[in-house]
Image (cartoon, rainbow, N blue to C red; front, top):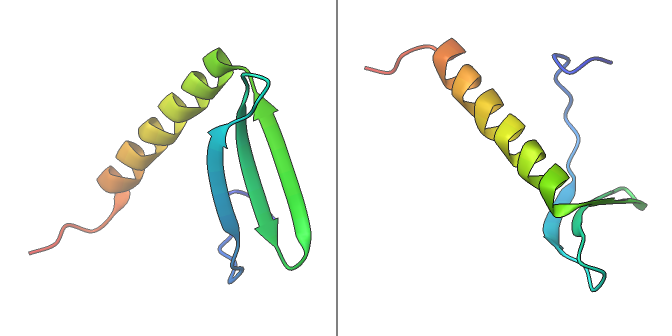
Length: 65
């Protein structure tokens, strides 16, 4: 599986601060839980990458009329 492979999988995604001053991205699906903690600066970089990917995806999508 690669990043371009579509899958029909449902997952719950939560993002928030931890009590230790980290940013947690928490993914849960079919009984599997994946908590990922990041320093705030790293979380900012991840957010920038998500925004950049969303912009690239918009440019790839067929134009609506």
